[in-house]
Image (cartoon, rainbow, N blue to C red; front, top):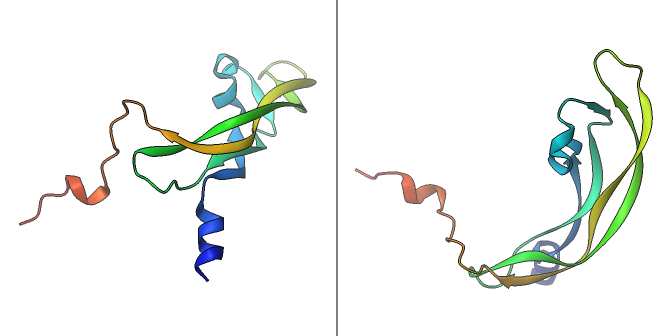
Length: 108
């Protein structure tokens, strides 16, 4: 039914796997295990193309990971990550509307 499709696609926090290096870009010289963590992140559709799904409320969560460098012994570290708790649709604010795949294809 429509209600089920709508509720599953609307802007809301959803569990996502996030790369450690994308959250900590200054740590590129280190390796982590696991290399990604499961976090709640805002995603989904808004009722208007001029809006996008953004976090309204966030919370920090600390996770224990294994950190190592190619020559060093691995060791445990605690790292903090931002989780999205509540989401809402907000105006794009000056962002260009993304092109659709078909917009760049020339038709003959």
